[in-house]
Length: 242
Image 1: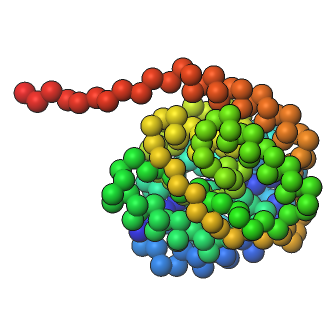
Image 2: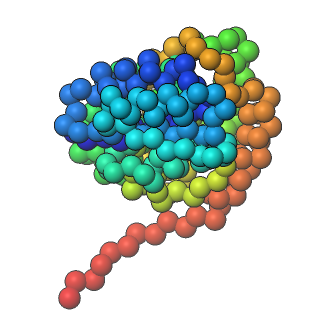
């Protein structure tokens, strides 16, 4: 069992050490792993804390964006840098529980034995610890997205996902693409399964996203993904033997 953990962070200095401890504990039964943190142009001590952590956590790799490019760009940096064929992503705010990663990994491996098209296990925060307004807005957004894109994913916004690196590298990259990874996987001919995961309240720091910001950006992004779906042509290819 090997895996690459990709964690994008922006101004999350207070959450670095606690989350790293949880990740290393969750992965103790893996044969090998790496933890890739991408500091997306943080203005607090995030980068300094990460560099200090490298001194005691040899499996930690740190990448730094000189200026903030967004969560999707940070995730893409991590995916490209990963050295193992299976990747797990999770948010750096501590609301995703790293203890769920082994189960998602096991689900991917076991289901692929009978379904080679399966490329992603997506976390589903079926019991969220968020404000009433965030819960309502998320439910509305997921409903609209699912109806328009037909991805049958109840919670595409969950940062906790386990997927095949090779499949992810085939997907088109654009700003905010991380919110549409299940739909993009389906567009590429792969299959996605959603599995319930733990969701925790934020204990430290403040959210980097506003609900209205995500709503307006999401509308244009959905239109873009719909366009991408209409331009995709999937074909079955077979090699002719000599």
